[in-house]
Length: 166
Image (cartoon, rainbow, N blue to C red; front, side, top):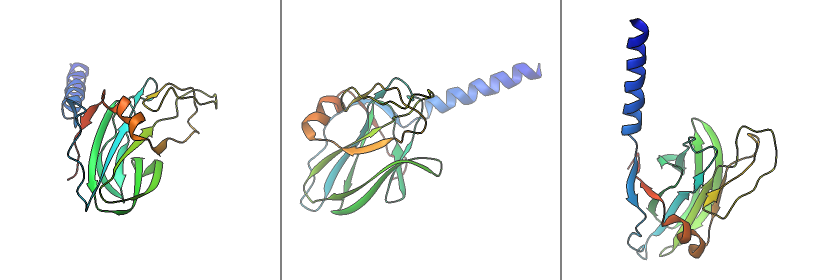
């Protein structure tokens, strides 16, 4: 009886966790171009065959913004200047990039998980939108600026991730 109650509670928590995600069913739709006093940054993560259940959190200048889901994207309007973008799991920084943003410009940043549970140290990627790799847990994840033409070929298939902190 106690075991059955434990299983029911565990399943309820699992279902609640899946239902409370910030990952939406909204496919990519470009937002308004940035004004001459702001920059627009799209942050996306391609589909991961391995590591897809890993959900880092996007931090911008040490402030949490949103989860970074596989096949997901989010966007930010920011003032021009230098910014530190990081993907974190707990207090551990998995990847980071320092970017100088200019007013009126649009940027595309890809977060790529480059690790799995194998012991092979090789790494490969099939385009900037799809991570199919054989890597190791010692291989760091990456955060890269991607050309707009390349990024928009992939991001148009992804789903919007709402900010967790506004």
